Length: 305
Image (cartoon, rainbow, N blue to C red; front, side):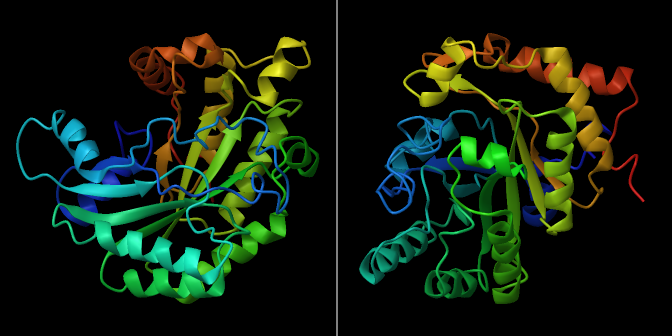
């Protein structure tokens, strides 16, 4: 486990690929059913204009050249991370075919060892899932599902527009297609009006759904979002560092040791971040989090069966 606290994505990737693997965030130019009028036109209440892909690139080679500067030596291996918006969502068969062509195209690069596809549980057609399943027979494939919360009232407030059952069904369908597909669940802590129990219930729901991995992020209030309007009107407050670590520790303690922890923090673009400002210093956040876990004897699965 990473520093003895949790089973990290870095550890997981080293087991799979034998070395450190770097993610390259890419923008496929897709949209979401909550933006194009299919279910809504406003998008999720917290989402930026970049569709949660504020650090994503459109050009693979440019992205690789920037990431490669961080690599001091050794073999370079990358995962192509289709991050922005909903990357399995095509309104027509032609649009879906183009998406699959783009998945396959990046895998022609010998330094790309797999793909990570960010999407919604309600936006994976049988056809595109079957095609992804075929790719997973030869390559590493991960599907990341934006679940965020199991609280129905919160899901309505954030304009998620799919049910908890849609989430359960999506994981069942993915695993029935190809067991090798690594499913990651995105959760957000600190959503407006949620209690500690609500957040822990979301974690328990992801565990029950048999997710392979979990990403937890603290809610960020970004400029030019409807969430920012509610925040500036005083409708809710964001979590402070100690409060977040307390709940994070409780969540980590109930997550089984075999589930990969892909993220326990998040950092929005500094030029768009309204709150909480303490998250802007990523290095300090990581050090403070590890110190909190160490001081309080927290590690993954400590309260598990």
